[in-house]
Image 1: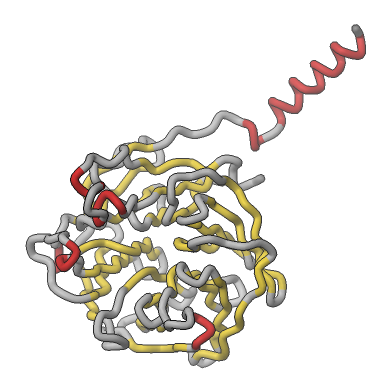
Image 2 (image 1 turned 45 degrees about the vertical axis):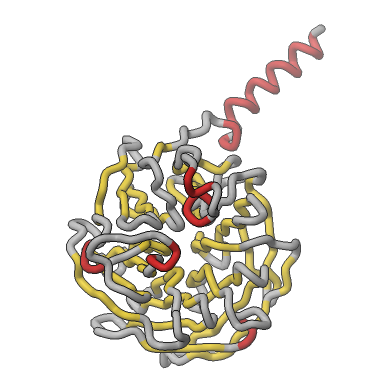
Length: 321
C-alpha cells in the first residue's frame, strides 16, 4: 500500500508540474460564415481574414472578435493570406477576386492585389497589384524580413514576389522549378528563418524548399528539402525562431512543427485529426489554427448549406511539447 500511495503522490506531482497537461485554453468563436483562409497573431491580437472579404481582429486576452477591415475596404476582395507585420506596422492582406466563383464583394477591385493597412487603426496604406506572372496571378501568403522587406508567395506559377520597404510596387523577384509542381503551380506557405533565408511549401506537390537570400538582397538558389515524414496539403507556415516553423496541413488534418537540419525538414506532428486546418500561428506558447472550409463556399451542394461554426482553436499539446 505504501508503494501505491507513493506512486499516486508522484503522479499528482507530475500532473501539477507538467506544463503540457495544464488546463487547455478554450476555442474562440469567429463570426458566422467567416471562412478564414489565414490568421496572423501579433501584439496580443489575432487577425483572421475571410474569403467573403475583410478581416476580423480578436483579442487573445478576452476572446472578443470585432470587424477590423470591412469587406471591400480600399478595393479589397476575398481575403487569402494575412500578415501582421510589426516591422513596418502594417497588416498585409492578399486579396483575390473570386466573383467568377460566386463571391461578389461591393467595392472590390478585380484581379489579385496585395493591400496594406495600418496595423493599429486599419486605415488603408497601399494597394499593390500583382505583376503579370500569369493570366490570373494569385496572392497567397507573405513573410517579412528583419529589414522590412516583404516576400509574397504567388500560387498560379510559384513565383516569389518582393516589396522593398518604402516602395510602391511589387516586383517579380524569383522563380525556380523546384518551387512548383510539374505544372508549375502550388507555392503557398512562406516564412523567413533565423538564417535570413526563405522557407516555403507547396500545397499541391506536398513539398518544401529553401531559397537563399544573398547579402545584397538578390536571390541565391532554391534547394528542395528532404522530408522526414510525408506531408499532405501544407498551407500556412509561420516562423518560431531559429530554424523551427509551425505548419498547417489542410488535407492531412494536422498541425506540425518543422525543424530544418541541413537540407532536411524534420516533421513532428503536434496535433492531428483536425478539420482541414489552412492556417496556424503561435501565441503565449500555444499553437492556434483555423480553416476556411472551402466546400461550403464552392461545392454546388454544400454551398447552399450552413457550415459548422468557425473558431480559432488551440492545437494540443502546447508549443513547449
